[in-house]
Length: 190
Ligand SMILES: Cc1cc2nc3c(=O)[nH]c(=O)nc-3n(C[C@H](O)[C@H](O)[C@H](O)COP(=O)(O)OP(=O)(O)OC[C@H]3O[C@@H](n4cnc5c(N)ncnc54)[C@H](O)[C@@H]3O)c2cc1C
Ligand SMILES: NC(=O)c1ccc[n+]([C@@H]2O[C@H](COP(=O)([O-])OP(=O)(O)OC[C@H]3O[C@@H](n4cnc5c(N)ncnc54)[C@H](O)[C@@H]3O)[C@@H](O)[C@H]2O)c1
Image (cartoon, rainbow, N blue to C red; front, side, top):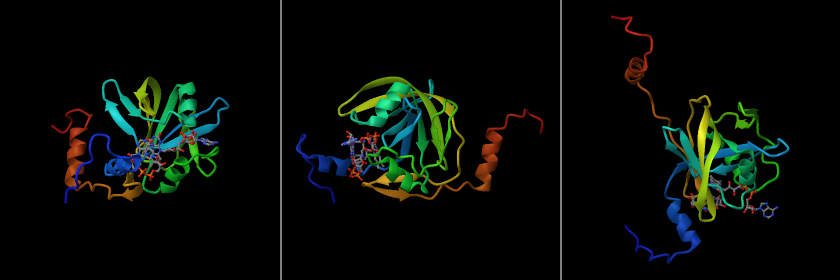
């Protein structure tokens, strides 16, 4: 049953979060290295694929974020897309801390930024533009490198908690059609 809507800005922060929590998203960890080459990062659900040509993405860090300050100085970041096995990774990077990488295994991206192991995929980006978003920044990044894709289920954030979903099944007929549509070997079968 529909609830009575709240009036113009006649709501508190808890009510706003409850409303926004109805929108289910994936979870990423945005990483970089600081001036001393130490890995830093934070859990981030405000990540969006923005543009295909040019390839742009965006995310929104709190203006008080120390990770953001390191990302801004470096001018580069990696977006790590988490799998459903990485709830603990999200929890570690979703809370303030000075050594969030303590129990995290990672490899350097081409630019030397942390790629967290066992994520669904990752992209390395250069900061293209930063605009104002209230108590957050809106950071637009230009994608430079696409990481490999792992066949696993995503970690989802919904109503302030974690969820997972079945990976969509690919039937043999769909796989055959995909192979046909992406074939680059020429018309050798004719
Ligand atoms: C699933 C999920 C999704 C999230 N999505 C987003 C998102 O899209 N955008 C976003 O900005 N955040 C998001 N968060 C929250 C974010 O991950 C956490 O706030 C994280 O701690 C931020 O890390 P940081 O390094 O950016 O900030 P930190 O530097 O860890 O700071 C976090 C807050 O703590 C304060 N602080 C830091 N150090 C101290 C100290 N020594 N003493 C007192 N206060 C201190 C800072 O001022 C800041 O307000 C999300 C969290 C979760 C779990
Ligand atoms: N965009 C963000 O900055 C953001 C997003 C999600 C969670 N968080 C933080 O992570 C922690 C865990 O969250 P929770 O489990 O209590 O969920 P919650 O119930 O506080 O969040 C529900 C929804 O509200 C929105 N939200 C929450 N905090 C926000 C913020 N500071 N700015 C903008 N939107 C926000 C998000 O859409 C989130 O999915 C909290 O400290 C929360 O502030 C921050």
